[in-house]
Amino acid sequence: MEFSMIPLDKGSSFSKYVADILKIVDESGLDYRLNPMGTVVEGEWDALLTLLTRCFRSLEKESDRISLQVKFDCRKGVSGALESKIQSVKKKAGHSIKV
Amino acid sequence: MEFSMIPLDKGSSFSKYVADILKIVDESGLDYRLNPMGTVVEGEWDALLTLLTRCFRSLEKESDRISLQVKFDCRKGVSGALESKIQSVKKKAGHSIKV
Amino acid sequence: MEFSMIPLDKGSSFSKYVADILKIVDESGLDYRLNPMGTVVEGEWDALLTLLTRCFRSLEKESDRISLQVKFDCRKGVSGALESKIQSVKKKAGHSIKV
Amino acid sequence: MEFSMIPLDKGSSFSKYVADILKIVDESGLDYRLNPMGTVVEGEWDALLTLLTRCFRSLEKESDRISLQVKFDCRKGVSGALESKIQSVKKKAGHSIKV
Image (cartoon, rainbow over the protein chains, first blue to last red):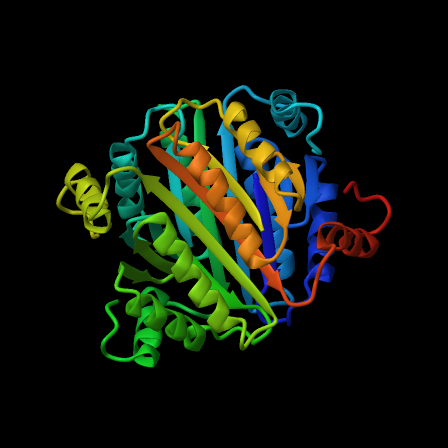
């Protein structure tokens, strides 16, 4: 899944909040990648929802209005996809592509 | 929250799957609205995640690859917002607006 | 398409901004529906991008940081889908469903 | 912006289509990063919409139904944010974080 969770009542600088959430993601032990627009995490359904809940419970202590966007790409029997999806595209797109 | 859950391995006609999921939403007892691009549901965090899990468990019986997009607008102490958000915009936008 | 455009530097009350954008959508002459989480608009690609640009140019006069989320469901040769998508799901889900 | 554009009528293997789109992104000269769930691109509003249009026109030659999701984080006077956003979070989250 990829998710982005920010407070809407704390001004427009979000890096402190993203950092706090990222620590929770890191402690989960799940494989993840931060990108400029969100955090991609790989795991089973229940583990991902537990992680989202932990992040939400942490942020709601500080904020009264939270925006959360999540995209799931749920595939049976697939793991290690954080790397394999990138490599599969890179191979087809050619060597000049920056990924 | 607003969510859209579709199978990616069952062709490009999704209304049957959306209908099955909508029945699960309806049975939850939560307040909801279907729109052309997704379903908006109001409820507490745990109830919403339980609902998403129920929809996911149902659809994964039929599909090996599921796309799920969810947006949450989490506000403390707010309920009845499915109507009040629309009315608030309508009032400010003026009577000629179709909502 | 469905879109949601809000300023991130103007506090957490967005109905004024949504109302201003909705007026621009209404003036476009395109078919649309407001829902509690966004606005769904039907039209050709170029018309939709022109509309988004008009909304963005209007809001950037007031805000230095804008969040915009857009989902497109682009189908060749399809029109009137704002109603037909709902009806198709409603028919399959049964009469008891609220849509 | 971050975007993800896939055909919905071509089965559930998308890497070929993502690769074709990535070549168009690469040729645009804009700064970008591919991640497992989408592609993040930095640029001015008009350049980004021109790029999306180019990708859409290319993919619609092959597909009758296209799903496109786009998130914009529009900030006045900001550039080089693909790196700076990551670094800002990394600095606040501490050295142990993988980013």
